[in-house]
Image 1 (cartoon, rainbow, N blue to C red):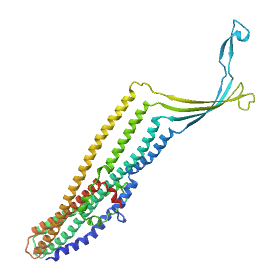
Image 2 (cartoon, rainbow, N blue to C red; image 1 turned 45 degrees about the horizontal axis):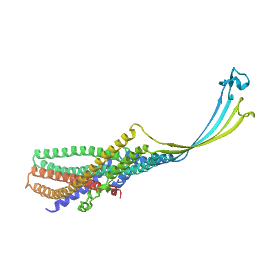
Image 3 (cartoon, rainbow, N blue to C red; image 1 turned 135 degrees about the vertical axis):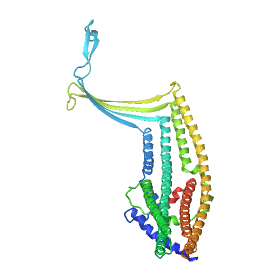
Image 4 (tube, rainbow, N blue to C red; image 1 turned 180 degrees about the vertical axis):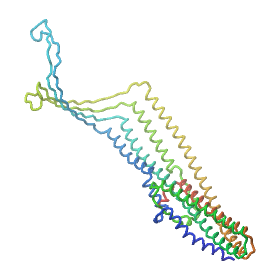
Length: 455
């Protein structure tokens, strides 16, 4: 009777082809198999979170350019044309014109006044400006780290969902296999019933069992569709896009205990480094606030050209044109601002201490995640091996029970029970595969190697 498990394995492989066609029909199109690597690449290319993180990283360079501009010369030009229809009169003593005792009202200026001026401002020393430049460079590094962390988060979601789809598909394969087997048994019982060798209740029970499997299959088809839609969302592609995930991606899972040997340095993980870079930014923010205590020195210069006339100056030979220039050195020394700067510095210091508490908690959390992931992976491997043995044993029990039923040595109840036990064992094994894969992803994440899934 040892040939029966092999026979059932043959039927299962045949059903894989049928189930594959059934699953492909959900997408209403034939598409090339989508590997995990391809799914991750599409997600990093299309998902809004990844796109925004890259844009923030790009924006970091622009912030550096903006901060650098404060240390560069600031040059501006202005030009104006003024018409004075009524000139203001000024009172002068008559003695100036040989008319003592009188007050003379004299108009000063010209009807038209035009000027063009070029101004320059150059910062020579301003601690706020130079601290801001350091902060801008650090901000760019911060965005780079955040972009890396965002990529890891996208990879984790897509990888987990990818295997969720695989499991749903595998459960559908198991159900299709059971439907084929149950249909074959029903046909045998139906033939026996027609020949008076089986009871009607046996035939009815086999039909009910088959009907339940078909209803279960429809539910699983719906579940596959929902899981695929979620995967497409995580990948950032249109929901109507057909995808096909190869069955072999799940079947090829080989538990590896060697992964447990890679102990991570949590201080090199993205979560930790993002917070440390944020701490560096807060320190620079504190330094920028303290810069208000320091004096600032700048150089200024102006050069202008002016024309005055009682007629419109353009094209008028009587217009008087002259230039002028000035150069200045400006020193600003802060003396007292009501302790405003001191209060801001203390607030910045509190923010730093709060973040340091978060950093310490994150370090503990990352260590906890690693230890839990190790434990979960060990347990998943044990469960997976046990469920695999259960499937093998359930196949043998079912084959023997079916053979005994065919020879009249076992009731139909025993065969249906054996069939249900086999279905349960297969589903449990499939679930164990998913649990192992998810535990593996969590361990890879805890070790800081999620991007290795792209290789």
